[in-house]
Image (spheres, one colour):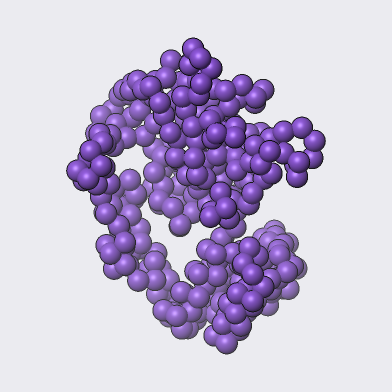
Length: 295
């Protein structure tokens, strides 16, 4: 958002790579429902109005997640709005980010809006001092010097998963560049005293929420999704082989030999394997969704 031309340098079309280099068939569409019993995916192709069914022998779900923990659909600037049902209920329904040009237009709009805020020397509050928040606020400071920047987090320091020396380095960088930091502070936009406590009695001109993750597994049956977890649950349950399982612990979509046919990898899954007793005693205890390498 702070340097729009970076988009073209960092993005590419999937179809030529998947079909040309990998020799796989690429279907551009949205999965609306996954049927484990019959092993059929119901999809909405991009350029047709109806639904189509695709059968399979094996399936890997790698649907990722969204980052807007307070939004119904997990909407945030850090991930394009790609689900058809989410677009009408989003903040930029005039843009179709399923297309590269739609994403480009959104980035240009946000870049222009930030420029206008900088002209007014606006106050900016970034909520969340994890990887996203620290990267975002330092980029804002580097490209838009006139912004008045503040970052907060509920933890005692920024970048909690990093070693203390690395976190302190980043905190000192922000201090040197005039970015105000507040820690051990929980975000509460409905409390006037909250904004007074961060030196914004009238509230900020603009807020950026960089906290939490939200599941986006809308196509999965409820029995395969967690009832708890980050963002209110909805994460795909898995066993020790990453095979999808049901809430009662059965392998979902097992074949005649009891072997799994569907797996969930990456940020779409629950990031733990439940078991008896305390969470620390589970086969795989819960891992923070921010710890991508460990997952």
